Length: 88
Image (tube, rainbow, N blue to C red):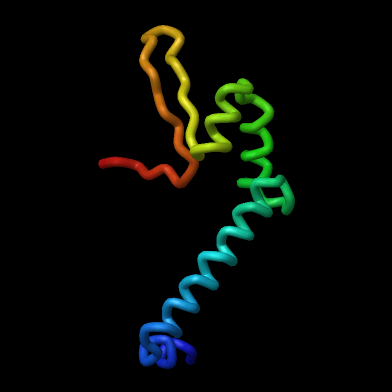
């Protein structure tokens, strides 16, 4: 029903809708990261924050990733926030 006006609407309207969507998504992400809501991702983020070292937590809050070092290999791994995908 609303697809046609969005396709017809050009330039300024499309940018306004996109900006509104990005703002709403940012507010929702912020709300969930504060631990509100009862979804599994919010609980997982709360648990992650409890287990990270102070340095890792600061790195995660600044960049949305943190580094870990493998105890046997000594390799450094970067863990990023987001959806993981299975590679073929």
